[in-house]
Length: 237
Ligand SMILES: NC(=O)c1ccc[n+]([C@@H]2O[C@H](COP(=O)([O-])OP(=O)(O)OC[C@H]3O[C@@H](n4cnc5c(N)ncnc54)[C@H](OP(=O)(O)O)[C@@H]3O)[C@@H](O)[C@H]2O)c1
View (tube, protein in one colour):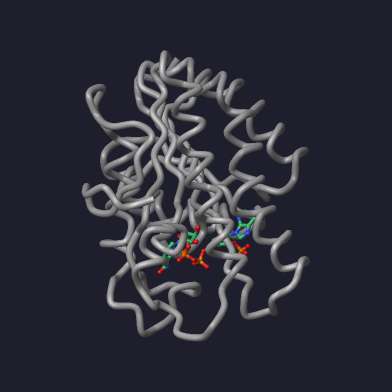
């Protein structure tokens, strides 16, 4: 079994995901870049390899149970354990309308996908001396923040906010279930980051946006579990 840590990051061919992979890779972690397109995953991994990072692309649509099982089998076969899982893949679909299909689609990617993937990978995370799950959430999933801030004016954003709030609640539940294990689970708000999702007006670059997830992915044994963080500060649920 390799001495190097192994990390899987979902939605990792662009945006914050590939930057999380880059920053973990620079710390000597072997990074597996999940993406819906095998070609895009491999292209992003090749780019990181040019930066002397041990990187590999993985076809992984988080809503596809066959691809989830295939990823778990590959990691078991080739690495024997998983040290870090970053559930980074996410969608913001509210611009498509306020209806049940948008709500379902958001939950499929932002909630059920990470849940299914984490469940499939738990035996491998438990095989690590220090398993870490990072759920890439959003401040928009914080009910306390939504109640105290008029972030959207009269605009309604039910699917994204509800799905990220569900991701937060699940983070707490999973951390409780794993309390007696070596696996820590935390939720992360990256900040408002310049990506395809965040848009051009966002104030943060991806290098800064990746920092919170990378910190949570590499927490020491006395670090927190079951929390929601931005830049090492706890956020309100
Ligand atoms: N940017 C911000 O300001 C901001 C703020 C708070 C939270 N976040 C969160 O940060 C995460 C990364 O977002 P980003 O800003 O980097 O946006 P992004 O560049 O749009 O990245 C989103 C990634 O998720 C992938 N994805 C979507 N559906 C998927 C699926 N079913 N299976 C696997 N991958 C899938 C996308 O791949 P495809 O291109 O193939 O769809 C893409 O790689 C998201 O969870 C987002 O909610 C971002």
